[in-house]
Image (cartoon, rainbow, N blue to C red; front, side, top):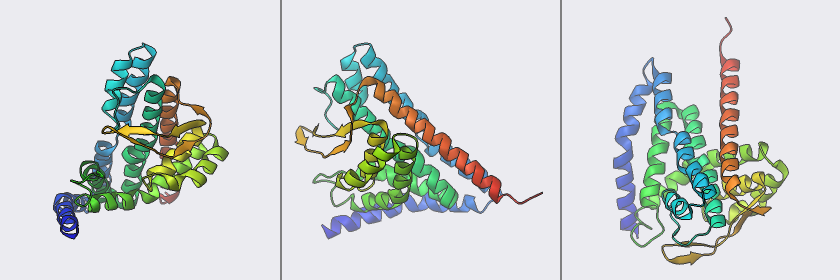
Length: 261
């Protein structure tokens, strides 16, 4: 186990270091804010998230269950061959809520905190965790370093995202679900995000799902009704409102910090 972890840590270091050092060099330039903005634009998955999830709702409304299953398989790791309409909606909403944090808000957070190096480090760590962080025999130890780095980098952004979900939805329910359910999920960062998002939308998510032919019994997330097709758009609407909130806060902070004329 130790040798596999060391190999994974070395591979992570070799994969990440050159790009972070290059971003650090860019950060020393007079054009550092421009470089950071460009890298952040490339790192954000906001547009991609909508492009992958909204067509699932379109397929469901058209009665194209097979098409919806196929599109869902592009964004989740669970088995989708036999999933029903309600299961498709639930899985899609869960993916939207989790990826809102991973693909959008964490990247914004690290751009603000550490500029170009922060964006590059976060995006590479998140990508390598997706590639190596599987809990299977092949990657359990090798991917340990990538998974832990991703957990560390996502810890604060995930909780800021969970708070934002709560503020822009059913706040009381979202905070209660976060407090009671967030720590019970398999991921220390996805749990708070998804529990708060589910509560914000008034949905009951989580529960058993099949992965690679094996049923996994996941704890419930949120409270309320079962997810429906319309909730896919509702979840994306929540993401969009949080993006606007964060952008407004950043502009306000920049205005306050700007030197007077």
